[in-house]
Length: 113
Ligand code: DGP
Picture 1 (cartoon, rainbow, N blue to C red):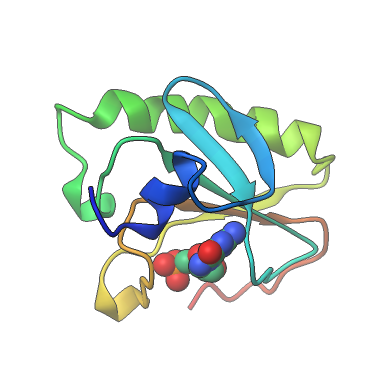
Picture 2 (tube, helix red, strand yellow):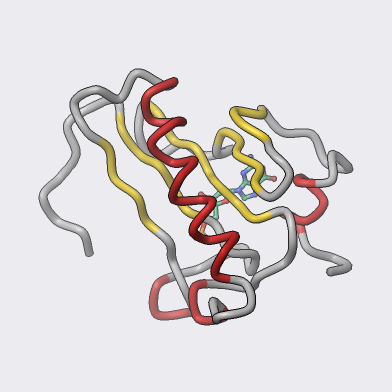
C-alpha cells in the first residue's frame, strides 16, 4: 500500500531497529517505548488492523503469533510480557497497518484500559 509508514519500514525505505525478520513478518523497536522492552511485530503485506483479519490473510497472523514467543525469548522476557493490538479510533490506533506491541522487561499495571 502506498503512503503506509509500516509498509515503508518493512520494505527498508524508512530505517528502523530490526529485531526479527522472515518472509512474512518484520519486527522492530517502537520509536516511543512504553516499557523497558517494546517491540512491534507487523506483517510485511498490508493489513489495516485486526478488523481486517480474515480467512485469506489469517495465515500471516498465525505466523506472527509463532514469532512472538521467539522474540520474547530472545529479548529475555522470562518473567512475562504483554501483547496488544489497537484497532480503530476507540482503541487509539495511530498507524493503520496491523501491528502487535510486545511489552515487557518490567512489572506492568494490572489495568489494560
Ligand atoms: P498504535 O498507537 O497502536 O497504532 O501504535 C503505533 C506505534 O508505532 C506507536 O507506539 C509508535 C510507533 N511508531 C510510530 N511511528 C514510528 C516510526 O516511524 N518508527 C518506529 N519504530 N515506531 C513508530
